[in-house]
Image 1 (tube, rainbow, N blue to C red):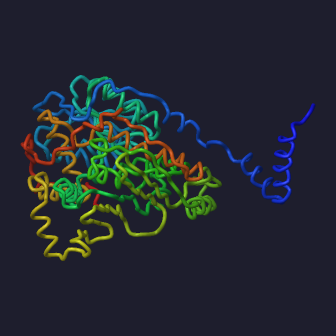
Image 2 (image 1 turned 90 degrees about the horizontal axis):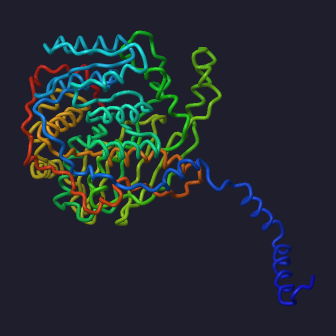
Length: 498
C-alpha cells in the first residue's frame, strides 16, 4: 500500500509528539480506557425518558368536602404524632389505623380513646395490611408515615383506590418512582402531597412572604441543608413489642445508608424552592454533587459487631460519605446549594439562606437574621419585619400550633393547611410535582457522586407548565375557616421537638 507524502509527515509528526512527551500520552490513554463512561446508568436512562403531561395538577381544585376521613399507615414517632395533631382539627374523622406492629396500633387507638374520639378500624399483623385500608370506601385521605421504600407504592395504591395521598419525606427514592407519582396523580386527579413540614416553619414562612413582596429583590442564590447527628439512632437496636424506642423499625434507615448521595434533601430544599417559585415560574435544569468519604459509619458498624452478633450483618459494608454538597442551577440562572450530613458531630441545622440583590436572610445557626443592606437587622428591627411580613396563616393559627406542637408548631400548621385546603376545595401548597422534584435530588446526586461530580439534567415533572403555573397563595383570602379544637389540652409529649 502506498502512503501519501502529506499523510506520512502528518503521522510521523503525531508519532514524534508522542515520543517527545514521554509517558504522558500513554498515561492519559490508559486513564481514558479505564474510566467508565457512566456509573449508575439506570439513573441516567430514567432521566432521559420522555413524558407528556396528561393533566396539570398544579393549581388543581378537587371537590370540597365538609368532613375529611383519614386513614393512617405507619404509627411510629411521625405517624402517632400526626394522629394527635389531626385530632385537634375540626372536620377530621380518623377512621383507620395501620401498622404491622400491633403495639403501635394499640397505642394510637388508646390516644383516640383518651381524647374522647370514636374507635378507629385497625389493620396490623402483616406487611400487606395497608392495602385493605386503602381499599376502604369511606376514606378521603391516606396519611403515610412508613419507611422510605414504602412511600411511593402506598401513595400510588391510595390514589388508584380513589383517595388523596399525603406521604412523609421523601415521596420517592428513584427517578422512575417520582414519575409514577406524577402520572398516577394526573390520571386519577387525586392530590399527592409530600409532607414537607419545614415549609411551614415560622421563619421560612416569614422569608417566603418577604420574598413575595420584593424585600430581597431578585433572588440570586439559596441554601438549605439537613445537618442532624443521627449516628446513634441509625445504629440503635429496636426492642420487641415497642411502639417507639428511639430506633428505626427493622433498622430501615441504617440500610438506606448503603447508597451515596444527598439522601434527605427535602427539609432544606422545599422552603427555598417555594421562595424561588420553582415549578411555578422557574425550574431546575441540572445539578452536580460532591461527597466526602465515610469516616464514621463503617467504623461504628465494625466496632458494634465485635460485641454484639446482631450487628454482624452491618459490618464490612460500604456506607455513604459523611457530607454531601449538591449544587443546582435553574432555568433563570439562579443557584441552590443543598447539604446533607447526618453522621458528623454537630448542632442541628437546616441553614435556610436566601440571597437577593437587595438583602439576605439566614437561620441556622440561631438567631434568625435578616439584613438591611450590609448589616444584620437589630432585634428591634427584626421585630418590625415580623410585624410587617408575618403571613396570614401564622397570624391565624400560629399560636394554637405552638400549643399543639410538632417541631415547634410547624407540623400542626402543615396538617391544618392540608385539611383546610381539602375542605374548601383549594389547591395544595405542595403538589405532586414538588413531591417528585424535591425527592428526585437524592438519586440524581447519587449519580453525580458516582460519576466524579459530573452534572446531570433534572427532569421537568411539570412537562413545561412551570412557565405558567401560579405561585402558592399565602393570603388565605379563600378558606382558612377550619377550626382548631382544644389546642390548650394538647399533649406535647407525643410530638417531636427539633
